[in-house]
Amino acid sequence: MTESTTRARHRSVRRPATPLTDLASAASDSMGAVGRGAAIVAASGGLVATMISPAVAAPGAGAAGALPAVDTSALTASARAVLRTSPVVSAPADAAWSFEAPAVTAVAKPVVTTRAARAAASRSAERATAAATVNNPIPQSVSGNAVLEIAARYVGTPYLAGGTTPEGFDCSGFVGYVYAQLGIDLPRTSSGIRAVGTVVSRADALPGDLIWTPGHISIYAGGDDQVDSPSAGKTVQFRNIYQSSPVFLRIG
Image (cartoon, rainbow, N blue to C red):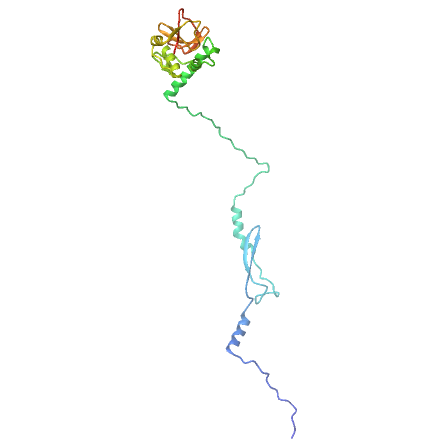
């Protein structure tokens, strides 16, 4: 009996196949590259946006790993059309700008005054004018003399018949107002003042005493001067003693 030297061949041991094994194999064969990348290409003619697959060539592509060709002209056509229809704006290199300032005119706000304010202003103006035109200036005897210092405050006050306030004085109203500032009350009329005063000689008269003549009374200012509210159209002022036979009176 002849012995055969040929060894028997056995199939290699294979991994057991399961439904999961078949599913994994099919998925592996059909799966391409996983994921994708995004690229935005900016060009002067417009914007091109396209999705490009990773460097895994699609089946049937040319050289291994080569990207498919992209028609950028078609993608940027709409952008170029917009640019062609846009207005062209240009400016010369030496361009300058200017503007005209509107003319502004200042208008003074009208001053509204009451009748009393206008009257007071008018009286002040009259006093200032009268003080500037007084023939004799305020004498030195006024300084330190209480009666004359008070009387000097009202130089320029207009004469007013029956007046007894700085709004206007008559002769006795002026004398009575000045003495009232020192707490001395005098009769309202010149004749009434004459009745309460003590007569003194001219040589003995002192600044602040009174000078009386029929129908008029004033305040002695020393030397040949007196201060009084003379008559209508005039104002309180210092002036020379003009009376021919004045009577000098002392109060108190």
